[in-house]
Length: 140
Image 1 (cartoon, rainbow, N blue to C red):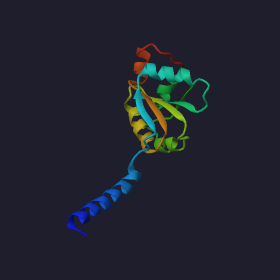
Image 2 (cartoon, rainbow, N blue to C red):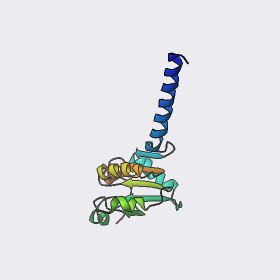
Image 3 (cartoon, rainbow, N blue to C red):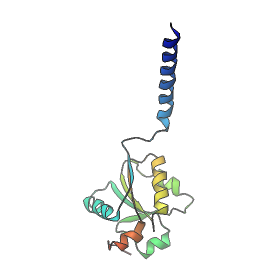
């Protein structure tokens, strides 16, 4: 075997091993984890009104949630010590729409949900503040 052939073989084997090892670290490419505008979120809600596999999660505090929230939202407090565990116990195959006050907490929650291998999660850019600025409906 020539040195050139040996080097090509060694490089090919190294590349194959690298790809195999990296495979466990890469998020599923079929997953949809993204930020959307309030108007896109409103349309998503309208299109999923009778879908039991569509869940809206408000990650603000219970007090913030009690003041007003998006209709049919479930409150999971981002500041709770059990927040990550509560997310991890959710059905990862459902579709989730998440939001907070201005987008910071829900942006972090979006990253956590990606790490936990959720299939489809949308975060409302600007949170409920931007939602209300665009005069979209809330409830108490």
